[in-house]
Amino acid sequence: MPAEPRMLARRISADTWTTWRLRNAEPAADRVAALVRAWAAGRPAPTGMRVPTTIRAGNRGLVDSTRLSLAHLRLNEPKLFAAMREGVPGVFEEDFSLADRAYACGGFRAAAAAYKQQIADDPDHLGAWAGLALCRRETGRHGSRVLIAHPELVRAVHRGVEELSGYRVDPDDLAAWLPEPAPDGTPGGTGL
Image (cartoon, rainbow, N blue to C red; front, side, top):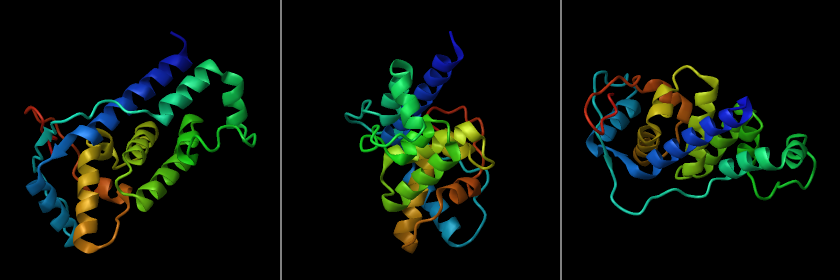
């Protein structure tokens, strides 16, 4: 398989997995609350804590993804994608966010900054959480393993901190504060 379609397939697979976790996985509320209290008190994250994760019942299947649409565009309409990449005015600017366009073009730092702004504006924007995790997967940023492996946990603690303190913490700071995931061996556990 040529390199570009293989790379796009890897990204789409990671996007689907990450979005699915954000929509369906629910970390244990008592463990999330303990992490929130530790963060708010300025303490280090508890080490050795296991955070069991359950899957919510309901209809939470796959959803439309603008990143998937951009991958299709890149493969099926390379001239149109190149025009978008070069900043030609009017090429899908209303259909795709700045964050998604930057991600599709490989501008992971710019995309991450734009996704973080989307999260700051709307902490329930699952597409922005998934996009930030995908950017961190691509860049290998130090302290991002929890965000990449368990985005639902970072999001839940993020929301808990806001509810407790009234302010929104930087998702990267929070992900770096959380302990690195470890092999768990129990179904549904994060291994934290």
